[in-house]
Image 1 (cartoon, rainbow, N blue to C red):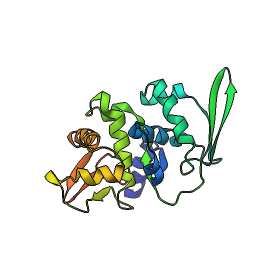
Image 2 (tube, rainbow, N blue to C red):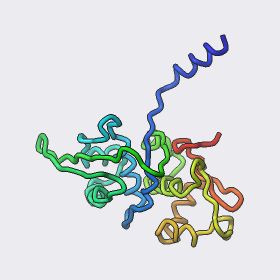
Image 3 (cartoon, rainbow, N blue to C red):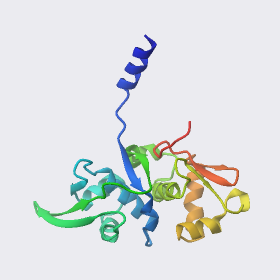
Image 4 (spheres, one colour):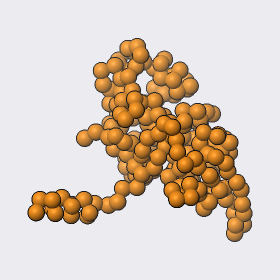
Length: 212
């Protein structure tokens, strides 16, 4: 009876949709690095895992789901599809007077992690000021790519002031310190990241493994 109840409990829960993200997102560069990482993750979440392709996504749809300005999307995406670590290749085609991109993903990745696709739902980040949500989500993904495999933890090589070594993060993320401090503080205040002895741990339940 207990086994049956457990099975029914799991069966009644909504199906979790997850996405495999390569840790090579650390190779994404540019002035809008954090938003670029988030946009890549969203594109990857639309992958057909049978064909490892995606051919029905427009710039406008990315804008709609992530609330990133269309022009910003148009500026970022071309910098992504030339990255061999993210895509095998990307083709263009026209349909109904719209330009679509056909993405070809790698079948496997050497180093990767999983995310719950609920990460792309804005209402799951109500504790973060709206104007910072995209950058904070991008920062969470970037930090995860540097965490120890199988964990949500990053440990500093050297201790920093107040438990955070911003100089180390700046070198690691290839971003300026002020930008990192700005968005990391929002993530800490919103409970998405927590300080641990000599390190940080991601508390966002949409990034596996998560902690209760």
